[in-house]
Amino acid sequence: MRTIHRYLGFFLAGIMAVYALSGIVLIFRDTDFLKQEIQIEKQLETNIEQSALGSKLKIKRLKVDRTEGDVFYFKDGSYNKTTGLAIYTKKELPFILDKMTHLHKAKSSQPLFFLNIFFGISLLFFVVSAFWMFRPNTPVFKKGLYFTVGGIVLTLILLFV
Image 1: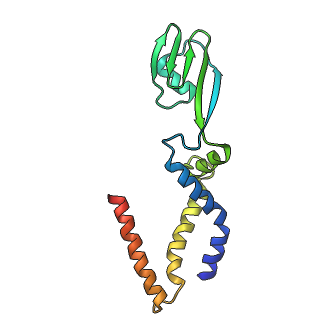
Image 2: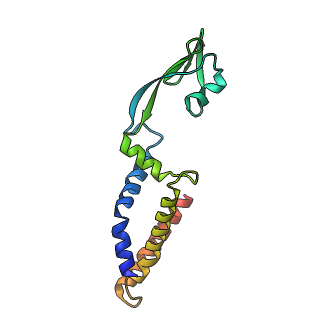
Image 3: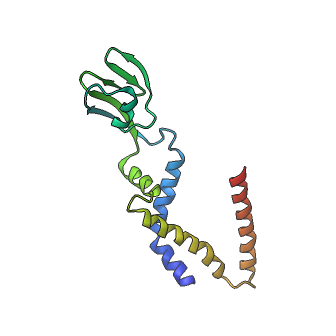
């Protein structure tokens, strides 16, 4: 058990670092922390209705704030119905961080979801195999059980408070 635990840990060190960093970055996903502004000019078809503009620009929950003539103004941009030109600002993470967070949030429709399942199972293995690292009658194992109980209590507090 120790050998498998050790070498699986070495094998997964890189992906664990990626998940740790992307997890920290995802905590701030509702802010502009580390995000860069990108100016986008997109040529769309003309006369798109307000209700369809968000899906055409791939902006979730797009809300038109005001209309002046043929121009719709929304948060961070505008769309001209006559010319079809949409100009807006988008905030994105730098390329590497963006790739890392997309890996972290992979869905079952994406090919990388198998990696996430493998990684999750590996983490569960680490949890279980940790209890086979020391003999149950040793002081280190008994002390480890106290830390385990403390970690479980902390987890329950974080879940339900």
